[in-house]
Length: 372
Ligand SMILES: Nc1ncnc2c1ncn2[C@@H]1O[C@H](COP(=O)(O)OP(=O)(O)OP(=O)(O)O)[C@@H](O)[C@H]1O
Image (tube, rainbow, N blue to C red; front, top):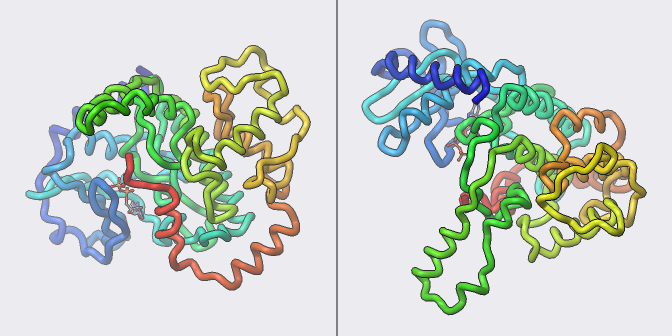
């Protein structure tokens, strides 16, 4: 346990004693719904006396564990001091039906609103977002926490051009090294190391549905240590989504054709004699430096990117968690061109034709969210 995680536990203990009942409308004027997630809803509100806008996060009491609520609140309050992390505002209370805390509000929606399907967003904006997220994640990692839920809908916009964004939703955050069951889910954001939790479906063929379901559950209970490399993977997928408005593969699974193509490219880049072993340990410094290898023919879904961007992706999307780049390694790839000239011109034309509507639905469908 790091000093930060011990302190977080202590803060939760203290705030549990002081969580007071309060009537929302007495202190806040609710303006509109900012968004809804699987745990509750988030409203834009103005504090009646201070006049400042804030996001109020409502967690239904019947489905929320008080400790989880206090953890998210205290983490956001005391540890999210980086400008690109969403900080809580020191207000937490309960109503007969909800636990509530106030947080800085992103007033310009989230990243889903600006990623156009099949077109993405401007490369400059994308690099600005990546730069801020690298800083935000490095900050969390330096304190010993892993976000574990980096995705477009958890990046809130403080202006319309992504000069200031904030990573939010700390409901999945865990301390590095915590043992958790690794569960594969159908999404590109799921890591390759989670794929081993899928088990071998052939052995279930003779069982009935219930037995099969039970066996699947048991097989999927592979306990792993929470590591920052999970956030690096998600940052790589998120960057691809920002640049293209699509995902590099539908799900991170060895029977997914486009993921296979990526693996083949990755293996070729790594060297002809190396087997792609997800659990491999780095042998020496130079082996981890993929950028020094020649550039073999690129996987089709990465052909629109420059060698600089390809190295960025291969660093963050290394199938081997122990070799995967850290978010702050991503900073060294910023500044140069990421999208090839011809593709950039095409995307710019498409962007002019498109509108942002539909981006949210499309990307959510592609990500397969909700299957976790
Ligand atoms: N501080 C904020 N500022 C602006 N919008 C926000 C804020 N917090 C949440 N939202 C909006 O509300 C939505 C749901 O919030 P959030 O992701 O925190 O809830 P959740 O129940 O934890 O979601 P999930 O299902 O992803 O775990 C977000 O996608 C975002 O659009």
